[in-house]
Image: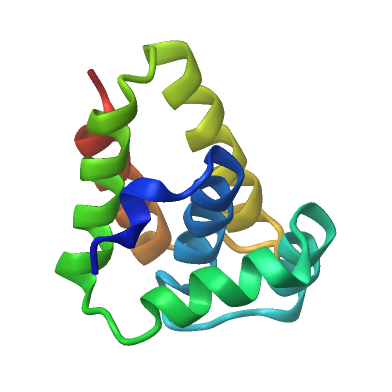
Length: 111
């Protein structure tokens, strides 16, 4: 864990979408298709290889560290959160657990 600071913004956005899709422990086909339509297979594979073995704390820590290291504006953060919400909604069910994770992300990502 640590190479993530060197990720491109595109790789970080892919990570956010994958994080959203996997946050309720159910990676639905609609979520997978959406992510595959937005990012290259190489990017997806790279992110998954670097993060699949991490626990929830480590995964959320990546988000906090990356956002802080890049000094994003609140507007940029809002756009990233909106992209994540699209992933959450792609399977037609934004369940309570996903909503809870999304609200936590809004808090940890805000400036």
